[in-house]
Length: 220
Image (cartoon, rainbow, N blue to C red; front, side, top):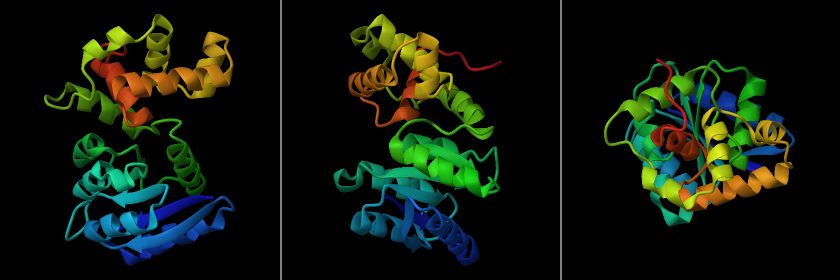
């Protein structure tokens, strides 16, 4: 069962997301937070698998709440899925740097939101329905946002760099396996080793590392 915490300052939105989460047989809402401070406190108490985090909240915004959740060893395993109203919300860059695992627009279809929660909980992919690729491309152009030094790639094998490139292009493990004609378990092993070698927290940071190392070039 995937445990989900909903953080949003709008009561109606928060309640709607909670009801939606509880309609799925494999998901359960474990709490609601109206502020970033409440989200941090509830994450510490409930240890959810995923936090649906709004960016603009009173008391403590979603960016700082994300940073505190991801930086605290007690909640380091909690994944944060950022929910935003605008597809060009520059605050998302800071949220990514703070440790967010993915992004969704609030007008995402219900079925896609539920699927996104499952994907982020599994650490399988950085969600990229339209907005995330543009955000990542802009993110890696900005100074002071490097996730992993390029030199870390010296410890990776040719095959691992090949897998990292495909991850950076947004391919899922299944798609990478098909491209390389290997088993899914083999791809997962490569991804796990990349996470360890590059000091990346999750697949979202592997995407950034691929751009950062020049394996994937931002679109012009």
